[in-house]
Amino acid sequence: MKTSRRTFLRSAAVSGLALSAPAALGSRAATPKGIAKAELDRIVDTPVLDTSFLTKPVTVASVELLRHGKNYLLRTRSTHRVFMKGNA
Image (tube, rainbow, N blue to C red; front, side, top):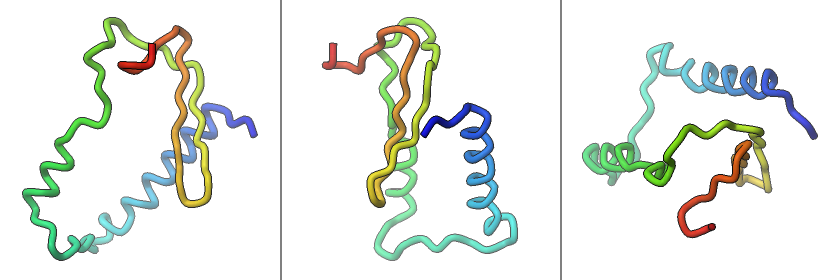
């Protein structure tokens, strides 16, 4: 199934609005018991993607959202050969 960039961005925008709607309406998300706010702040501040090995901007060629059951994976490809550390 081929998805255009416009369709992908529209879906992302709608999803973002849908997820933020409860917060906009004044409801508060419950913090799970047993997890301290400091621990959540540490998790949020932890980098997810190491970009230190990139020396110049990367042009995105394609983005695919893959699903296997309840698991999702975002596969992004560049127009140039760019590898993650250790995958050269």
